[in-house]
Image (tube, rainbow, N blue to C red):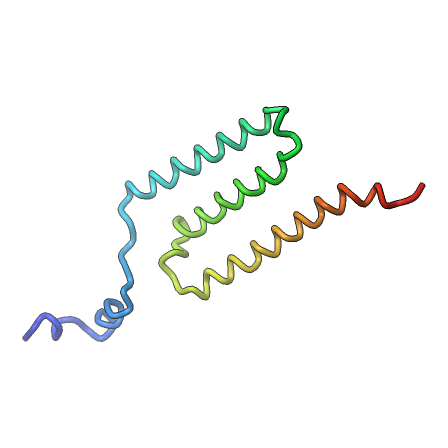
Length: 115
C-alpha cells in the first residue's frame, strides 16, 4: 500500500484544500506581545495633549487592529472558512462607519442648529 492509501478521505480532502495546522505556542506569545504593545500605545496616546485632535480616530484604528488580531488568531478565524471571516468583518465595518458618522454628526450638528 502506498502512502496515499493509508489516509482516509477526510485527511486527503484536508490536504488537497491546502489547510494548515495551527501555529506553535510561541506564535501566540508573539501575538500577545504585539497586543500588549498596542495597548501601551493606546494608553500613552491618551495622555499626550498634542494628540487630542486625532485622539478618537487613532484609538479607533488601534482598537480595530487589536480586535482583528484577537479574532484572527485567538478565535482561530484565520484557519476557518472565509464565510466566518465575513460574519466578523461585515459587522465590524458597519460599527466603524456608525462610530465615524456619530463623530462627524456630533462635531458639526451643533453648528447647524440655530439658536
